[in-house]
Image 1: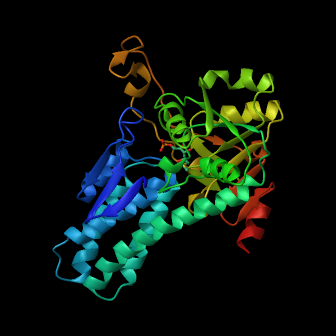
Image 2: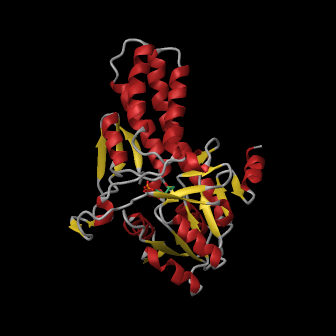
Image 3: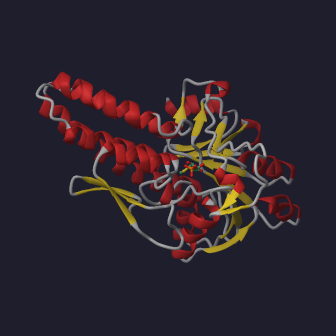
Length: 340
Ligand code: MRU
């Protein structure tokens, strides 16, 4: 089951807004539909967003009637701008779009550029699955048989093309014969934990329990959580990790209770240029907070803040698991060594 795939000249996505009640697919036939799907969280999770956007450019290339290479590049640039404005925090979106545009620019002819855009998007899709498998292999060594592991949000198969990053590590640990139990936070307000992670783990027969976000401290104080593993939307060269809102407070609690806190992320999620204050934290609709489904759960006119991500500083992180190896603090140094 692939979260995103290229099929019959369209982009096919699992509709994550319908899970866990219905497993339905959405077919995007043009880049505008792809952009809408990313905005509405039909597809979400940093690596999945990146690959989907790359396929969006492939749709734009396919639809272009331009007669020349320059004309095609103008059409691609319009699509590029629309796609890059969909969500601001996950770096994979910008990484994927820049990579595909770079390849298109280098092509000599219009037809060559059209072909390379799709080839590159397909390549990225395969690379994502391989990177996740490798993250799994590297990370599973850090987990012990019988561990009770907490994860926040969904960094699973549904957040990537397949297999997942944080959940990929859990899958790999299980494949190596370790029995792990997973505790999932609901992840208010969009409920990626209860709707997606609980669904995904249950589907794979992995032991899973759901807790309210507010129960993390209590569970840790009772010794009921042995390790934490989460994904990331952006990792800075300093080891600052941007991830789903609530990650920071889980990291503080883990630190207080001496529970190792791991981040699993492919190198496509690393941002080697930005400083913490440069990163835009997405602010989402107030409706996500004041309503559950269609039912209002807050008074009218109440002021609402709804930041979708937060930043966990490096001093709270035990290790960052990548496809090339596990980074240990100090991250500036270990990242330099890893990249050679
Ligand atoms: O708003 P979302 O659902 O796109 O946020 C997703 C996350 O925060 C994930 O933890 C992150 O993208 C890592 S996915 C491997």
